[in-house]
Length: 54
Image 1 (cartoon, rainbow, N blue to C red):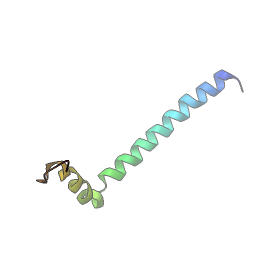
Image 2: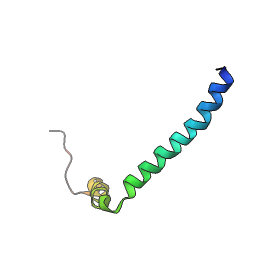
Image 3: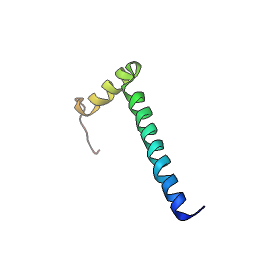
Image 4: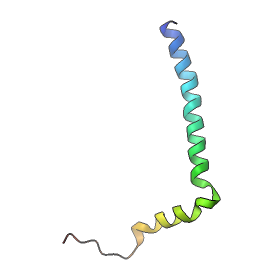
């Protein structure tokens, strides 16, 4: 295999791999069963707990 062949292979299948990973991660986050987990996590910074360095 030449360098050009490896380059074309990595650009093509690397892009497909990253697209597939992105789609899986997006489906994972927006799956309806996980909504409560992410809604709770989104509220953590807004909770009324005092932050102190005691």
